[in-house]
Length: 346
Ligand code: NAD
Image 1 (cartoon, rainbow, N blue to C red):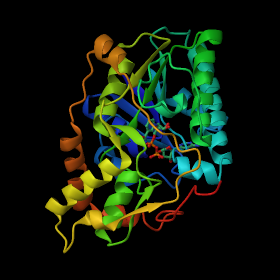
Image 2 (image 1 turned 120 degrees about the horizontal axis):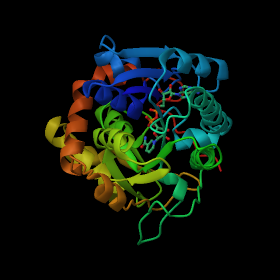
Image 3 (image 1 turned 90 degrees about the vertical axis):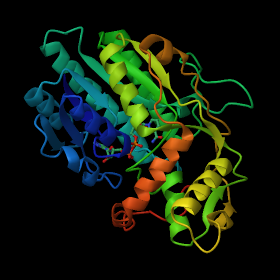
């Protein structure tokens, strides 16, 4: 297939691009290169046959129309977004602009392109979203594809809005779409403002390792390569109009996760004292969702997807990757807001 991937210089988008190229797809990577982008993430495919990079903003209607006209993709995988909850608390406008308006602009460009091509039924607009649109769970239960939308942060509200636009463009205009909602991702190339790279960074530099609140918020973690595999499977096999929840069934409290990371670091890069002694509890994030957990039955039963990594193998591989790539990590430290406490204001 010829794929147009948006946000392909980010964390998950770059994993999708690398895997799609390895599987033999042609890929047009469209990315505005915001603070969260890193071209090193896709260096390995830069000279691959069938790979093209276009620096463009999804909010730019003329640019999106021109890119679609030139490259004529069979499918769009839409990952470009503002993605950090803490930044959405301090500055929600960028999240509305890119995640809502940007998705609208891209949808309209896609609709015009698809209409002009004679409305092929095998075209796909694949929107990549998050389980955070479903809000927060109590002690029990799981998010399914039919869970009600109850977003609690500006980030999750903007992603929920974009999910609704995708659905409406399918129902109203017949645009062939698929929607996926995934749990927290981890793995190589994650920008050092998200929990796991922050923990590794702070641990190695001897600084306090911050944990929000009591560390008892629960997340369901999935390795980014397992997510990328699931996304390509959904794109190839799922019927138009369908949605899939993707999750690793790996629930952990934030404290358990951080302690596990410290234990791995103790083994791989021993220091004078156990890294867990650097753990420090800090003021909680306002509106912090208590628990996320995904029921992945539909993607497992319909498409035969199974994650390849366990938390043990995935976290060890991830920590080792950061230890082997400290230059990549250190190069991003000068970027705006990195290393600062963001999103604490009520
Ligand atoms: P990221 O912040 O690492 O990367 C986002 C990429 O989008 C960057 O390369 C950035 O330059 C690009 N981008 C931002 N605004 C743009 C614009 N206006 N035009 C073009 N490009 C733009 O994000 P990520 O963690 O890789 O997440 C990718 C997608 O997956 C997002 O849509 C996110 O909501 C979703 N998602 C993320 C997670 C997670 O755990 N990280 C989980 C589920 C879903």
